[in-house]
Length: 532
Image (cartoon, rainbow, N blue to C red; front, top):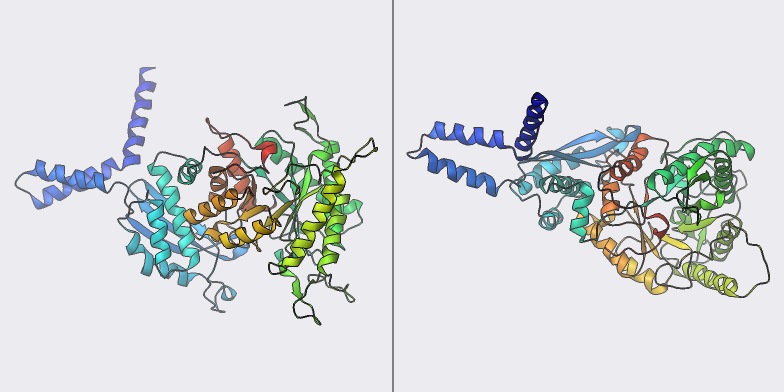
C-alpha cells in the first residue's frame, strides 16, 4: 500500500515538472552559471529563474511542414513550441503553389516556407496566452491565409494547456461565454454536387438532425443508424448501390434532388423500425424506446451558388441549372427563382425538411425575398383555425420555434457560401431572409475573428452552425469540435461518418461529453440563440 502511494506521488511530481519544464529550465540555468562562473552564483541563479518565470508562456519555436490530408491531397501543418510542449494544427486551405509538377498544382511548400521566413521569428518570445495580440500580429504580416489560420489554432491549443484548461474551456473564456454546450450533430448521409460524388444530385449534402435526442451519445447513435440504412433505402427505391462521397456521406445516384431527400427519409424510417435509442417524447423522458421517424429531421445544403448562372437572354436574371452535375443527353432546362422556390416548398411539404443552406446565389436578392414571401404566406395559413383533427407528424416545418428575431419564420435558412462576413450578416438580417450562420474558421481568418463572427450573428438573434470543413478533403484535426462547444454553437457538422477524418470530429465531441465536468447537451434548444 505504501509503495503504491509513493508511486502515485512520484507520478504527480513528474507530471508537474514536465508541465512547467522545471527540469530543463533548472539544468539550463545551472549549466550556464557553471560555464560563466559569476562572482555570486546565487544572484545569477535568481536573476535567471526570474527571467524564466517572465517568459514561461513564451513561444520558443515555430515550424511548418507540407503534410497530406485525406485522399492524399496536401495540407499545411504548423507546430508551435513552448515550455509546455509542442502544439500542432492543420489547414488544407490555399493559396496553393500552382506548380503542376507537384500535386497537380495544389502543393503547399510555399506556404510552409512563408511560415519559416515571415512568421516564425515574429512569434518567438511572444506570450502564447495573449490570443488577441497573436491574431493581430498574424493578420498584420504578409502571410498566406492557411498559415495564419493554422498558427492561430495552434496557439489557441497551447494557451489552453498553459492555462490548465481543456481547449473548449479556453475558447469559452476567449468568447466570454457562460460555459460551453455540446451542440446538436448535423450529420451528412448523402453527398452530391461539388463534392464530386453523385452525377445527378446537385445538392451538396443531405443531413439528418436527431431533434428529439436528449444526449449527444444518443443523437450520434440515431445518425449512425440512419447512415447505415442508406444503401438499403437506395435498393428499395430501385437506385444503384451508392459509393462514398468526399465528405463522408453516400453518393446516391438520384434522378432528382427530391429523390435524394426521399432516400434519406426512407433510411430514417428503416432505422426507426429496427433501432432502439433514447429520445425525448414527453412525458417519457429518458426511456429507451423505438424511436419514431418523426423525431429525426432533414437539413439540405443546397449549394445553389455552384450551379447558378446568368440567364442567356436577361443580363440581370439568375437561373439555376440543376443538371449542372448530371451527364444526361437531354438535360432539363434551368429553373428560375420562382421555380426554385416552388421546388423547395415541394420538399418542405412532403418530407421533414427543417433547414435549407445556400438556397440561392448571393447576389440573387429577389430570390431570397420570394422565398421569404412564400414562407410568410404559409405561416399565415398555418395560423388560421382548422377543423382537421389529424396532423402529419412529419410536417413540422411551420410549427417549429421562430428564428432570427422574426416571429413569422420557422424554417432554418442557413448562410454558408452566401454569408461570409459581418456585412453579409447585416444585409441578410435586414431582409430577414437568412437566420442562421454556417461558420467555418476560415471565415474569421483567426480564432479571434471566428469568435467575433459568432457574436455578430448572435447579436441579430441568429442561430449558429459550426462546420469543420477547412478543405476538401479534410484532415483529422478536431479543433473545430472544441470551438463549437466553447462558443455554444447550436449545431455542429463535420460531414458524414464514412471516413475517420470526419468521424474523428464527432468522436471528439463524445470525448468532451465523457469528461467529469462535461458541458450540457443543447438538445431541442439548438435553434435558439445562446448568446456568447
